[in-house]
Length: 383
Image (cartoon, rainbow, N blue to C red; front, side):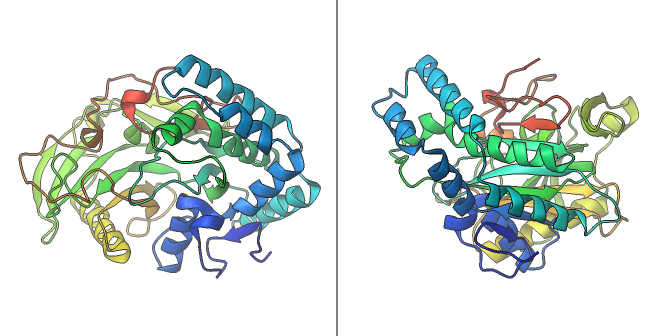
């Protein structure tokens, strides 16, 4: 299957645009084209979302519901958001779109000896921008198996354009709802033995001479959501020498349960908790990849990475996302002592045992693990 206006494969050879692929999708296609180690996948483009919404005939109704909403009235916002999302999820997908999405999924599965689980990730047109931070406002679903689960969660990602958080953010920042659209990424899931985030500056103070890496065991959502306290390592960007390191508690990891066909949280034993989750060689490899992303994009980057347990050492470091850092990169650096870590950039202090779901990003029974948010301070435990 070849890329077209509704489906664009990461390696499909079509120039990525924000308008067609959203922030996340365009970044993944760009990184793939640049030869970076990105797990394969495809993007269901904004043209598909636009056609779905047009066919459903609910766009004007949504605009009317959002008109005049008070961003401080959270209860009303949640009520309106829930109604909009339920409406979107109840509408049928046009047959032509459904057929093309299924064909793309089968084409992706054909690249492997047997079917593999995938992640389905929202990619709005107003996200991952140099002057805005939309991280976690729309939904991501992990470890999905089978075409039915994938197509249903694509529609849930479309609906997540109208999470309460996303609506409030747009209202407070004067971003109109007219013209917004949503692409959706479908990507091979990584069986992460270690994962995390890296920033090509120190998020505590904006020092661009440093690279900061947070790492822990298992799938990286437990790091980016603040569910675990990861290892935090600061390196010199030129020499890649370790400037400081703090071992995190790393009390739990998110790993696949093959029999249950989903991700489960598992306790980490004392021996692994007491040592750094990355070897020296792995630490250097992550820092080098972060530098490469910054060089390519020509601005400080906030990347997500993982070491795949199914690949041999030296070939198992994968790049899952690279977005512009928005907190410090537009300001002059003012070096000072680091307080460490990804969450420090947001003033969030992870609490042991805090779960990482928000909004409708709750686990979908039998279809995969979902994370609808990134910043730990905005998360709460859900049953």
